Length: 47
Image (cartoon, rainbow, N blue to C red; front, side):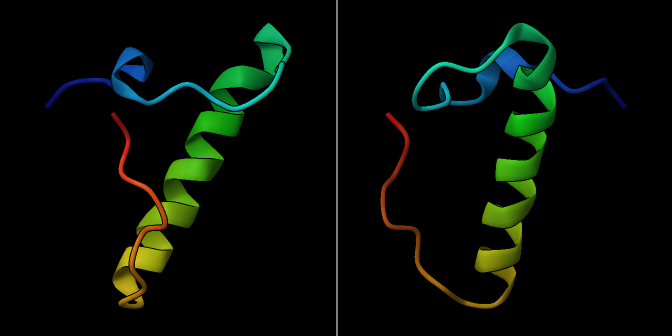
């Protein structure tokens, strides 16, 4: 197992304070995972 590598995530839109960046990335990832689990399609694919 390995720890999470936030550098692999697409950047957040807009400005986010450094202290809030990792929790925001994690929250977005969990929301995307939930949408995927429920069968919804992603609006965009990260480049």
